[in-house]
Length: 65
Image 1 (tube, one colour):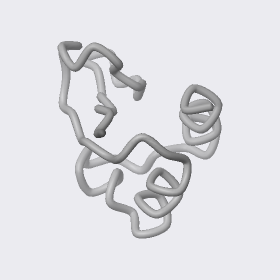
Image 2 (cartoon, rainbow, N blue to C red):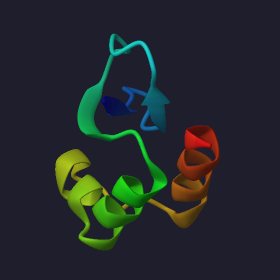
Image 3 (cartoon, rainbow, N blue to C red):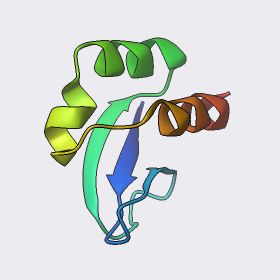
């Protein structure tokens, strides 16, 4: 199962559990390991065109729990 991560028009990055939130999205599998791999290989940075701060990554990890 995949989960969508979205960079909203307000420039925030959040998990989109509905799959319908407005903004640029990227999909990863629904586990902390997939998120860690995407962060390590800078795949989310590439998908969103911005460098993602550590605080946002920590918030995404908490939401996945």
